[in-house]
Length: 548
Image 1: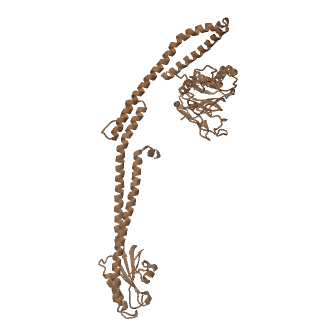
Image 2: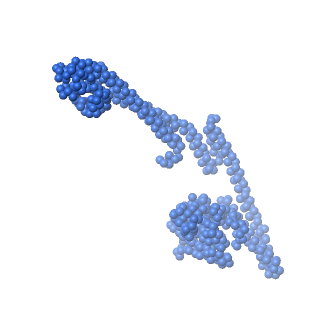
Image 3: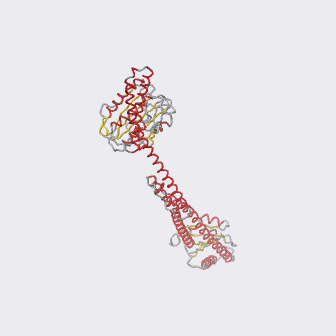
């Protein structure tokens, strides 16, 4: 449901419309129902007050003939007055109860018509207010003569007499009709409000659909364009803003298609040019190599200046041949012709072969190489030639940039992957350089003299070799702390990587704010599919790091 809410604009608009309109309509419905109830109650109170005033005057006139409560026929007059006032109700079935109470006299009995027990409906507070000479009222709920519970409007008024008897006149008017009318009004208001809310929701859904449908079509068309279907277009209908959007989108897609085709053609020509040049240079290079080898072999018979020139020529020809070989390899990757010859391979001897091959360079520069490889075989389905080339590039770079400090090579494995890390403690990488280190012909310090005569394509080819395996080649570096490269390959060819057996950020790395490393967003490099891989956040073990 959360995902549906995030993805569907129409659902959000309709839901917000329904909730907002429900609150507004509910508020208006409450106000209207409350107003209707108040009006009905005011009308009932006005009617009862008029009847109470008339009844009080009539009772006062009837009782004005008596000066003492002990006089004969006073009780009969009171009974007749109550019956008259009750009989004066034009609706005999209305349930109105009329009564006179004169408790102070101690002689006159309370009289109600109809003759029911109304004690629970006339509260002490109401009696006290009426006894004090006020006209008072209350709304009470109770049962009379076995009838179901009913809400009554109770009004009381003192009746002026010539004797001190405390005569009080009470009207008990049922509010059944008013309650029924109020309920009907509330039901009508609620039904109208629900219908209005549903209508607003339907209207919002229709309007949103009119707006969202072209946007969805544009999104689907954009997805097809991103998938390489460059001939996809939107249907333009009408002349409104949405039609303008569709026309603009189509124009943009046409321009993109034109530019992409142009770039593809340029890229194809560039790859072909590189490949053709590399192949065409092979023949003259072979001739020059033969002549250079002859001169180099006879250099001792030349004077020292010419002999030194022969040595320089030989070294530059070696570098030129390496450059041509790398260019041809890059051309194969660019053209999609690179093939992986995977076979079960023990990586321990591969690591040892690379170290033995570079031992002379390391000894000449003064950089010791430390190995941390298991004694047991580490078997993986890889192309040993390509893995050895990747390691040769990584270890060669580490030795060249090691600043005379040890270079450490570690090999690890788990059930799904194998990993090799190459750690140097040289000048390291500045922030952002770990994103550039795999670019072709990129150098961290262009003024730095090369010790190995590299071509500037080693890491680029290594990255392509790792991708061909379905693996990762990632870099971490920090100024003054050196750098570490990690090659992670699936143990079985074709499997998908999710984790790496070895850390990318070294355990001895220091955070920028000081203190030992506990994990940090320091490692950025090409991950699965060539995307950037970011190292673990603080406190996270990057053994479970996933390229993202």
